[in-house]
Image (cartoon, rainbow, N blue to C red; front, side):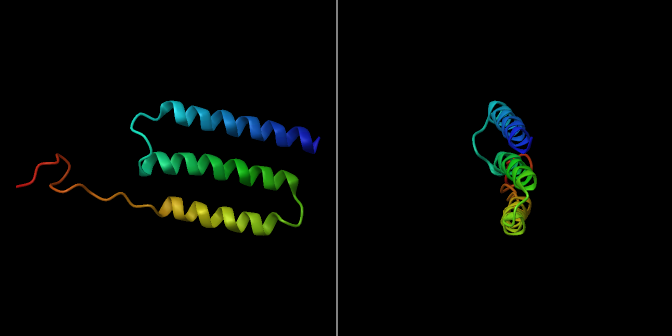
Length: 87
């Protein structure tokens, strides 16, 4: 049952990641990087939780640090405001 659940989570995560890539229009900007990173981290965290061995706390710590980095990325505003014109 555990093996089957891991495959189900992996397939759902892969399908979601493919969907994110298909919806990308402007390449890897900060927003798209966050979307891909969150999907990958959520998939790996779910796989680690289902596996549930002694590596769970270390794995969740690393995934949590990566997620914190992704959520902490700040977009830099363009010069001249939202219209892009200066002056």
